[in-house]
Structures are given as structure tokens and as C-alpha cells.
Length: 313
Figure 1 (cartoon, rainbow, N blue to C red):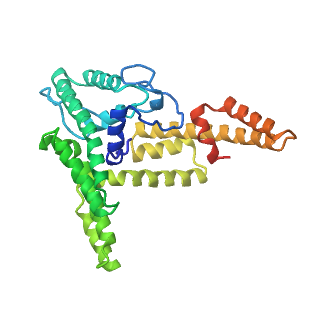
Figure 2: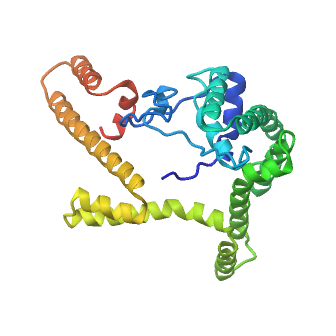
Figure 3: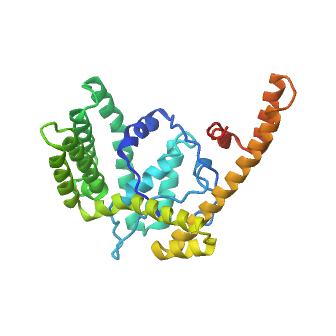
């Protein structure tokens, strides 16, 4: 089960990374490595270990590419590896995946859109520079100007139909949030009037966007139910069956795996903190104590995991 990623916040950063080859990677919790769809046990780059590629790109019955939001999701998934792989390597991997997932004619169409997408991301560097040069703050007008500039950039590289198919839902989400912001900031409205307008805005939300918006909340509510079940003594099997009935067996299995990963992580943290406490209370020079604690960290966690330790110490 996936929750939709937002592209707007990363668009300019990704575009700059493409141009300057300096995409900063974010440390992620280490989880069990899953095989890729092509049978290769190893992910494209290490930061993607344990993840599944975004973007369910498909072909129609007459070997035509289905152009929708799944394409940019797939492209962005692999482009997040800039910094670990060169842009040429990333493009080659995306094209390899397209050849593997799609029929030949559809794959060729997708590669054309990939080339246009890369040009679009590069253009966003110029868009952001122009916006910064004429910046008037972070108010609603500045937000609108940025969104409009991004939409105009897209039309340089994609047809209106392609823009709607690939970015329509994202644009609807942006419009929705801008309208909510405007209502909330409108000093001419009373609190009751604001609530009425917000309710009307929610009621007019497109079904696709509503489903997308409600998905994270549904997961939160589900996990709240899981916590109540565990507090009441429910077994792992009972939790799995409840999740499977609410979602589906595959999603329930992935959540169970995350539970196991989290339990293992908590156990490692508890063991580390106990041994760290012993070292803190040991009679030794401060420099020796710090060296011993670092040696303990190195023996228990890799460098990425160590970046998470301050939150527990």
C-alpha cells in the first residue's frame, strides 16, 4: 500500500540536483531487503534498499502507453538516486525498466516522455532562479506565482493532454490547498463562515483527490485500532487478519514485516542504551569513555543508523 508522494516540494531541488549532480541522500531505517521485480536481489542504489519502485506504468490492449501520474512517480523514484549514480546511469536504468515492464511501442512512448521530463526538471532550475530574483515573500501570491510558473514550464515539454494526465491530480491538490489557505486567511470571514466555506470546498473535492487525501488518515486510524488490539492482548495473527480484512493480505504482510523490523530496532536500541549507561557510569577518563561509546556504536550500528541515535540518547 502506497501513499501518494508530493512532487511540488522536491521539483526544484531535483532539477538543481540533475544540473549540478549533487542530490543529497536522506538516511533511512534499514529494513529487510526485498527482491526487485527483475529477480535481482539488490536495489538500484543502497538508499533504496528495502523499497519498491514507485509507478505502476502500464500498456493498453493496443500497445499504447497509458499516460498518467504513474509515469512521473516512477521517474522520480529513480531520479532520487542522483548523487549515488550519474544521471546517465539513472536514465539507462529507467529505460531498462520501461523495456522490461512495457510492450515495445509503449516503451518507446515512455522513453520520449522521460526525455521530456528530464528537460522539464532542468528548466525548473531557471524557473526557481527567476522566482527568487523577483521574490516578494512567501505569501499566497508568491505561492500562486510559483505554481503558475511550474505549469507554464510543463507546457513547454508536454502537450496539454499529457500535462493533465501526468500532473492533473497534483494540480488539483495544489488548487485545493491554496483555496483552503485563502479561506483560512480571509479576515473578512467569521469563524463560522470559514468553516462553511471549508466544508463546501471539501464537498466539491474530486473523488480521486478525496481518496488520495483520505488514505493516510485511514492508515492512522487502522494503526490506532492495532494499538488498542495489542493493549487488549491480541496476537500477531489476529492483528494480521484485521489488517488483511481492512486493506488486503499483501499490505497486511508488509505491515507485519514493518512491525518485526521496528521490534528488532527497539531491541537493539534498548541493548545499546543499557551498555552505554554502564560506560557512562564507569570510572574512566572522559576521552576514554567517549571512545568506548563510539566503539559500542560502531559495533552495533552502521553509519546511517548511527545518525538516528541522538534521538534515543
